[in-house]
Structure formats: structure tokens, C-alpha cells
Amino acid sequence: MTDFSLWDILRNLLLALRWTVVLSLIAFVGGGVVGGLLLFARLSGGPVVDRLIGLYVQVFQGTPLLMQLFLAYFGIALFGIDVSAWTAASVALTLYTSAFLTEIWRGCVASIPKGQWEASGSLALSFGEQMRHVILPQATRIAVAPTVGFLVQVIKGTALASVIGFIELTKAGSMISNATFKPFVVFSCVALLYFVLCFPVSLYAKNLERKINVARR
Amino acid sequence: MSLVAEAPASEAAPAARLSAAPIVRITALRKSYGTNEVLKGIDLEVRRGEVIAIIGKSGSGKSTLLRCINGLEVFQEGSLTVDGKPLLHESAMAMRELRQHVGMIFQSFNLFPHLTVGKNVMLAPTLVKKRSAMEAASQARKLLARVGLAEKFDAMPDQLSGGQQQRVAIARALAMEPAVLLCDEITSALDPELVGEVLRVVESLAVEGMTLLMVTHEMSFARKVSDRVIFMHQGRVHEMGPPAELFGSPKTPELQQFLSSLHD
Image 1 (cartoon, rainbow over the protein chains, first blue to last red):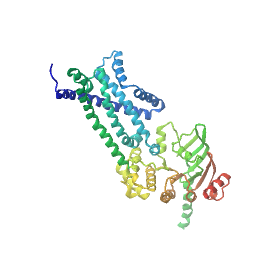
Image 2 (image 1 turned 30 degrees about the vertical axis):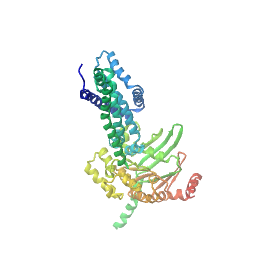
Image 3 (image 1 turned 180 degrees about the horizontal axis):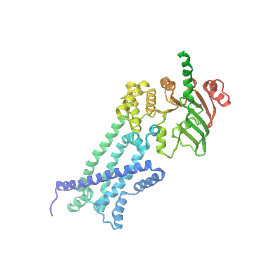
Image 4 (image 1 turned 135 degrees about the horizontal axis):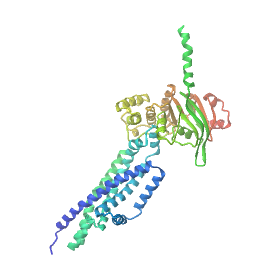
């Protein structure tokens, strides 16, 4: 039996780390786009649309991400469409992220004082112009910190994609641990890599929050 | 000879200004929040160039009436026209058209905090009237000079005092060249020493012939500037007339009581 050095373990984990990063980016960009569209629909679509999207948010916030991944993986297959772990993980994480982001952003928009809507409306701005020039610039400043903070949740959430056979950091960790019989060493490395990925993001979010608070004073 | 001929003409001018077709016509307007009726049938005609002060206790519906005129509040019955065009809540286009003729100034200023003072004034003309940035900027500078804030073009709103912010809000409303300006208790959020600078600007607008509807608690200002005073009580126009008449010899006990409560 070949011996695995610590470097061998780390090297292989680093290779798998790529896919964690890629999956996080897909989830975040996809979730951001879908979440943005949902936000716009929710703000402009009237009470029925608002209710429906509220339900969508509740469904994704009220069920474990693991179940969502299972449902995406096995559910889409029921329709006779062959889904790879890639597709299923991307779809599930995108929807999950979109539900959280749209809710975070809705809260930010709702926190803008009513007077801003009234003043811009009185100046004959259309809904789109109000959003683009008055509401969103202010809401964005509030939203940056919680949004970046949520990215950390998404990065950690990608670990669950390992259960449907998606080879990212966690899955690679368990495979290497099976081959090396050094689970503690391997998973310590896995945890360390997650930390290395997430910590700068958290730090960045904190920094942004501080900057924006200073700018507001 | 020529002097004699011209004299009647110059006297007729202000009268002609006032006697034109009404700029705002409100007919049998009713508004309720749920089962609570706050406006119980309002009839009002505002002539071009007229300055109207609306007074009354809080909860009498005076702010609600003002907010109905530019569509910030939806009313259930009656009709409202501005410059002959009816107010249609269902049509975003019609609302947009109407709001270009009706400016509004708020108690809480509502400047856009993320934009400079200049950009606050320029925003609506560039977006709605499609003015070029240059044109809008030079107009904004003129308007800011008019309200005495020429040097604040590049300042942010939170660097200004309340009185200055409210004057910027006036300049911002004027930038759309409205036919009617609604003022909703615009000095109520100001420290007493800042009230004067805002009222002076409003007075200058009145002198220049702007049609003004203002809800106000500044009775001496209302008396001095307005052509007509409306006393609202329990959702109705309770008494209406020239300021000298209303303040000098109030007819209804409600107005008498209201005015005497102010002196306590």
C-alpha cells in the first residue's frame, strides 16, 4: 500500500476545492440573478405575486438544503431528464440562494423610508426610475454586508452537494480518508480549507459594514 | 393721455390672473381608511395664482386632502382635476402626467440622501423632462440661488440644516416647473429659528404668482400670504374665506374655538 504524505492529501483537496469555489459562484451568481428578478416581481407585481414569492421563500427557508438537493437530483429524473450531480447541485443551490437573497434584499428595500417613495413619486418618476435612481442606490448600501455575509452560508452549503455524488471539497475529503485511513488528518485539512475560504469573506463583510456605517454618520 | 389709458389695464391684471379657469377642481371627494371616513365630501376650486392656506386640528383631514391632489392618497368617491385633466389612479401614465404639474413639499423634506444637493434638484428634470445634464445643472444652480443656497450645489443633504434642506426641497419641486405647489406642514419639523428662512421663500413664490396650497400651523403667515383660508373640521370644509374675514370674525363656533386654542 502506498503511503500518502500530508502534501498528497492537501494537494488533492486543493484540486477539489476548485469545484467548491465554482459551485459557490454558480449558486451565488445564479441565486443573485433569480433573487433579483424575484425582488423586482415582488415589488411591482401586486399582492398575488407577493404572496406567491413569499411562499417560495418560505418553502426554501423552511426545508433543509439537503432535502432540496435530493429533490433536485431525484425529482428532475422523474420527468425522464437525466440529471448530473452538477446540474442538480447547481439548480438546488441557485434556488436556495435566490430565496434567501430575495428576502434579504426585500428587507433592505422595505427599510427605505416611505418618504423617499413619496418624494420621488411626486416628482413624476416612474416606478422603474424610482427604483433605479432613488430606492436601490440606498438599499444597496444597506444590503452589501448581509449579502456578502450570506455568501459564507452558501460556501458551507455546497458541502451538502457531496451526498448526491458531486465531487467537491467534502466529497474529496471522504474519498481520500477512505484511501488513507487518516480521517482526522484529512477532515482537519478539509475544515481548514473551508475556513481559509470563508474567513476572508466574513472579514470583508464586516469591513464593508463598518465602512458604510462610517459613511452614513 | 397714455397714463390714463394704461391705468385700468394694470389694475385689471391681478384680477385677470385670478379669474382664469380653475387649475384644481375637486368635486364631492370622499376618502376613507377602511370604515373610517376622513374626507366627507370636499368641493373646492383653486384658481390659477391663488394662494390657499388650509388650517384645522390634526386629524381634520387637511393633509389627506392635500395628498389626494397629487395622488399620494387614493380616494373612493368624487372627482379631481388638475388643469382640466382628471386624476386617474389606475393609469400610471396619467399619474405621471398629472404629477408633472403638481409639486409637493413635505414636512420631513425627503431629500435623496445619496445624492448631492445639485443632483437632488436635477434628477427629475433629466429623467422625466429628458433635459440634458448641462441644462438641468444650470437650471438647478439658478433655483438654488433663488432659495439662497447657490454655494451648496455639491453638498450632501445631511450636511445642511433643516431649513436649508427644506429650501433644497422647494428648489427640487420647482425644477419640474409645476403649475401647483402643495406644501404639507413644511415648517413643522424645523427648529423655530429656521422657520423664517423657509417661509420667506414660500412668500416670494406667492408674490411671483405660483398657485400654492399649504397646510400650515403658521397662522400669522397664512394670514399674511394667503388669498383664501380653508378651515377643515371632521373631514369637511367647515369655513372658507379671505384671511381677514376668517381670522377676524370667525362664524362657526368650531373655528372660534380652534383659533382661541392657538392663543392659549
